Length: 561
Ligand code: HEM
Image 1: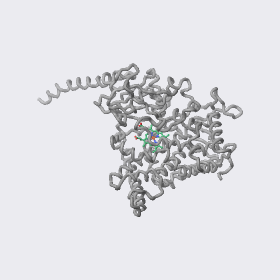
Image 2 (image 1 turned 30 degrees about the vertical axis):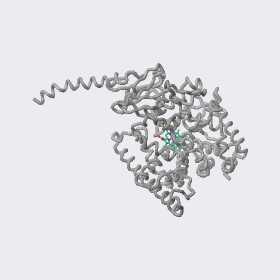
Image 3 (image 1 turned 135 degrees about the vertical axis):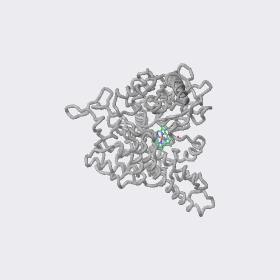
Image 4 (image 1 turned 120 degrees about the vertical axis):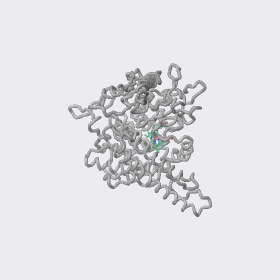
């Protein structure tokens, strides 16, 4: 009897599953632009086909860009990776991206972050308020001495490499520098991240390094069950990092309380620390377990989000400058004007720390244009959002049609958006800092988040719409650390750009003439033998971590003062 029921039910089940599958593949998001789906594979075959056309290990943004070209560059496109991954919407144009990151009545803090990141909802708003003052430009500028101290160690290493002629991975050196800086800015403690001998580095950076190394190209997915051993290793490393950070928070708080005990106002800090952590600890009356966990989680996020991205910006920036003699000269001229002809980093440091030094940092307008252009061409990160299934969240097509995209992971692909030919014209792929002159303010205030007016339109009145430059993303959930990244980058460029010449090796190496001179192309840039590209290493990093040699520039003094 049972067997007969099963036999009757099986074909019915098969028909049901088949109908469901057909609906999922062809109907559910059928109105969205997409490659031709297959009933069994969704878009996995289409994705594989595009991937196999280029470098196997290139960053997925490059694959999406090729796919978008194939589809005639729609504002967004649908990719169905079920059952291996969640179905996705890749956003390719700035007006569409703005629909995701702006505040709306539906989502007052913009569309929630991707399902792989815990979205804290209201808690996020409270926490961001706690940490915002620590990341305000007026506060960050007071941390210049800490940034300069860490930069000095970096310069010593560059001098050493210049002397020995040894090749090295510039991105790695910069990762250690930016980790040291973010550590000092956040916690006022030295993380000792810059020792050339890795065994001498601080425990936190060693654990972070190990953790990041678990995210190689093959195992970077968040689905631990696809690689349980890697998942377990990540869990163990994250737990050890947690213990170290909680310990640090307890020590910092105890120090504050000890110093406060003589004061009538319990929360008035008498400790001179200006770290972001110490500022935020003042918001808490008691150090409850919940507070400690929250602070540790936030510091962990800041450490992670705040060093890798900035190091990538700097690695690409020095490379682009080395390849574009016109831009390098303009940077050097600006630094001469602002800091005087003495190119010794100690002289630059003295000027920055003297009264009015912060003004000099803010007047580096060509350098700011270089930073802006580097982030346009090589954005280290992007945002992924997730409107909950069944929420009815819609996006508007250029034809004015509203299409439901709830349940999709929505990825604003900055790499595609920031090279949009309809915005940046024929020079969309060129390194051209001059396009930003007069428009270099990258601060959160200049963000002028596009406002949804009554018609749901976006108001933009600049030549290049602000929304078309979004390496830090926009709207209420944008990057809290963008000012810090900007200040860091300007200080490091001021100290480095006139002292050193970087020479790329391997991918991205310059083509040279018979006389051994680099060959200049029609746009005034050095021709390369083979283009350097990004690969996915948690963030988008140069595939070889920027293999270079360094030399002292012609005008640089022979040794650091
Ligand atoms: C060049 C450097 C940097 C780039 C390109 C960058 C980029 C980004 C991007 C694209 C996001 C996602 C925003 C979104 O989902 O809408 C983000 C978020 C974030 N970034 Fe950065 N970032 C940089 C530096 C920093 C620094 C120095 C910090 C220091 C703490 C930092 C901390 C954060 C945090 C905490 C978030 C989450 C913000 C939130 O959800 O409220 N970032 N960043």
